[in-house]
Length: 501
Image: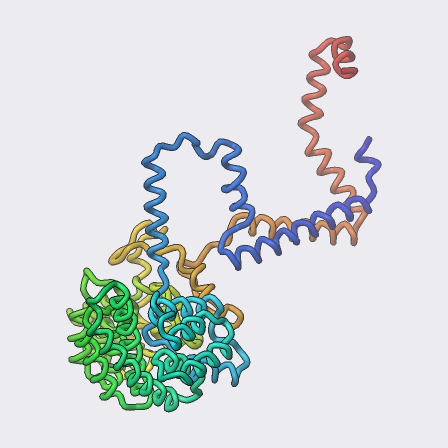
């Protein structure tokens, strides 16, 4: 009786409302997946509904808690953010890009990490004893660039201060030549402070902290001066400065000066020296990087790339040198699978950030930005990479529960890269590609189906009303059949009492 009273307008309103609601859910789910990489409905189900339904055992033993903490610590260490060894100068390069394009190449998170680095390397607890150091300690904490520059000039009015020259060279100088000039002044002031603190470092903890700070300042200045020479075309001079710096301070590996040296040697096409540096740093006990892995692959590809042909290789088989080159490429791609798309120019490059995440998109951009020219210089190297890099993914287990030559690819890289890279005009590369969650597909299907029903009901109300009634009648037919059987089995008086209840 109820079904016969429903009009076509009701069905139009019902299907239209269902389509609207499912469409809104679909839009929200898609936005949430694009931003956070997971389904909101699935996340809520796992985080809130599953414990209520008894999916998590509250009496979990302590061992499992310990294992969970260990996995969390491993995840944090995998997603450690590193200072980019080849980072550009903020005033002479990043700011010029902003003036030309109107875009900000650095994110707030990246610049905040740089501010923390500056406070760690360029300040110490005894800075309040010297007025210039006290001023610069406050300057490194300033968020406003103009306030930092003004504080540096204020410190220089009192005396020559190495860290003040560093700040002006990094942020105020608009050309590399001006930057180099300021760093030379910083070197003169920093070298004097370093020699004085070196003589007093054993007189107490305060003097030891000052010497550590002065050492960091001096190493930073010399490394940036070498980078200025490299940018100004004096590559041999830059190589000599980097070698001297690595000999003078062999324990300061945190600056990764060897990556600057590798890039400069590749520019000189001094491949024998590149191989010597790799022999020292491409060791199983040392942390890897895209520069190490891809430079090793480039050297091995150089030996065979000029004569490599996929057709010829398929006919005669691969030689030992070709096998070694392909294995080196597979090793590099497994370490960072984002690099080949930038080297093969399948994806556009942007300015590299000041910090990178190893094995992430940020590291791939930083590597390709400086090393693409070196791959192009080796004849056939990019062709060999194009023909072989895809084979890496057939060797890596899926899902990524374990790696092949390295640890499993960390799942946290996408989140960190979205913080480091300007996602406004750059699409972050994600590996492995996430499949669309079930609920996005479900809501998309539901939205499309109900929208089609609403359209058909609006265009053909009488016909769709007949179909709706027939469908509902068919749907409720088993229930009606059961009710009839129950009525035939039970006495009429008992059935009457039950219906009254």
